[in-house]
Structures are given as structure tokens and as C-alpha cells.
Image 1 (cartoon, rainbow, N blue to C red):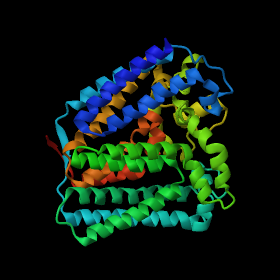
Image 2: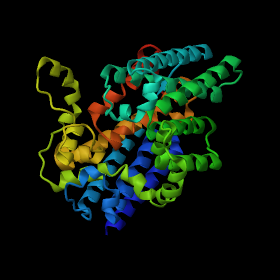
Image 3: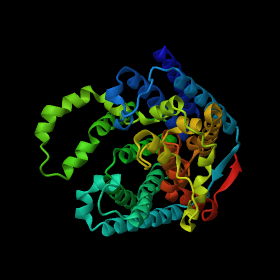
Image 4: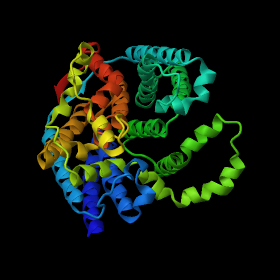
Length: 432
């Protein structure tokens, strides 16, 4: 019965994703649905079949009834509510319009590139130089490095503007004609800087997000993606998820025995690839099971607003931490933000089924809002298309982790650029 109900959820999400793809291409809602299939269909099935091979080690200290159907019915309720939220905003007849020239686009790319480059340089300098950063990339990324610097971590978030500069100039190259040699030089420069920035991020997620954003732009311009491109992208993503950490470790460790790894671990990793991949996304479903199985107090939608009052902590006020801290503590016994709950568990701990319905509807509106106003299939402005390509991979966080406080905290550069579009570039909402 568990497998049958999961199959029904899968079919619903597949049909919905086809509907989104047909209308908007690789949109924010479409990518959210793709992640939903992994998180709320494939991961539960893997947990049901082989719990101890798939479950995050943080959850093994507790006992969970993985075979229960109740969480699956909550998942169904959530996605039905999210569907209605998406339908509600799909009727909005407005989109963003921005008047730009090639000269303004080039200036925007250069300014973003400069801001991103300066922030990346500051990050490297503050951490003691490039050699130190290269030797400790994984520790810096995970927050376990002894040389912690919160200011550098914050400033380095603006290095994402290097990526944005690449996506804008890449969009310009695909959309416009009669380009100058300088445009191609900018593309070359931004490509090198972006690859270097991705390498320093020491994470697989950033690399895959970069490729997805390229596909978003390509599909928006040419209206189709070659089958060979999709195959190569899928194969690369598959291998990168499995061996990305090993690859990055090998690049910075002279003692790494590549021959021994290939002989002893390569084939076994490929054979267990399904469990390895879905184990990265098991915490969202297990968080929901944990909230439903044990009697925790509801948070009564406070997590929608707690982030607003964070500055008052400096004045001595007792402001609750975000939901990720609470979730990590009740699961792992550590007060940290290591385990975000995911969209459905977030809604449930707010106010049970009512919270699930409300949060599902809000997320449906949230994702579709950006799809509608950026209108990717009819978008011919390189700045808007390049920025939208970033949002497609960045804003899916609101489903996969669904912590509003951490979402805003980690996406300040995106939010500032969105405000710049409205108040500096004077982008306007116009009727379609």
C-alpha cells in the first residue's frame, strides 16, 4: 500500500510538471516539482525498502514507523494545496518589463563582476590566502574550520554576483545579434571567474545549479534542448553527485590514491548509487515523520515572522531561533541549523494539517509569482533572463529546506538585486 500511494503522488507530480514545462519551460515551479519527486517520492520509497542504508545518521538515535501511510496522505494534502496556490497566481496578467541597451547590459555585467570579484578576494585574503583556502575548502564550507570569520562568510555571499554576471552575458550572447568582440571577451572572463568561484565553493550543489541555470537560459531562447545535451547533463550530474566530494578532495590532497579508489570503491559506489543519492534528501521526509509521530508543540506560524525580530537579540530580547535549530535539536540533540525541516514538515509543525494546507498554498503562490512576472518562455531581456535563471535554482530552497529565516539570510545578494531591478533599473510591471 505504501508503494501504491507513493506511485499516485509520483503520477500527480509528473503530470503537473509536464503542465508547467509546456507553459513556462524549466521554471521555478518545474524545478520545485522535480525536487519534490526526489524528496517526497524517491526518498520515502528508499527509506521504506532499506532504512538503515538511506536514513541520515542523525535520525538513527530515534525509532520511526516508516511504513505508516499517514505522512504520505499529508504529502498529498500539501501538494494539492500547493497546486491550487499555483493555479491562483497563474491568472496574474502582469510581467516585468525592463528597457535596456547593450551598453547598459555590459555595464551591469562589469559592475556585478567587480562586486563579486572584490568579495571573493576579501574572502580569500581574510582566510589567510589562496593556499589556505584551497587546502581547507570543505572545512570552511561546513563551518568546522578553526579559522572562522563570519564577516568574510557574509561578504563572500556576494561572490555569487560573478555567476550572475556570467548568466547575463551568456543570455546576451544567445539573444542579441551584432555583438562586439568585447562581449565575447566578457563571456570568456566571466566563465573563468565563475568556474573558479564554483571550485572554491567546494560543494556539488553549486555546480549542478550552475548547469541547470544554463539549461534554463538555453531553453528560454531556443525553445528546445537537444537530447544529447540533456543526456550529457544528466550523466554529469549523476557522476558529480556520487563522486563530487571525492574529486574535490583528490584535487587538494597529494596523498590521495586514485588507483586504489577506482579499484576498491568506484564500482561499489555506482552499484549503490540510488541509495547514496536519495540519502542526501532523506531528512525532509524523516522530519515530517518525526513531527507526526512524537507530540511536539505547534509553533503557530511564528517562523514566518521570527526573522524580522532577529536584530532585537542585540538589545537583549529573547527571540526564538529559526525552525532549523528547533528541528536539529529534537532530532540530534544539538542546537544548530544543520537539519532544515523541508516544506511539508515546516507546515505541519506550525499548526498540523491546517499549517500544511496554508504553507502549501503560500509556496504555490510564491513559486508561480516569479514564473509569471519573469515569463521565461517569452523573455528577451538578458538581465531579467539571467537573474531568473539564478532564482530557478536558488528559490527552490523554500520547498527543499523551507526555513524562511535562513532563506533570507543566505539570499541577501539575490534580494538586493531584485530591489535594484525595481528601484535602480526602473523595471515595471506591465500587462501581458
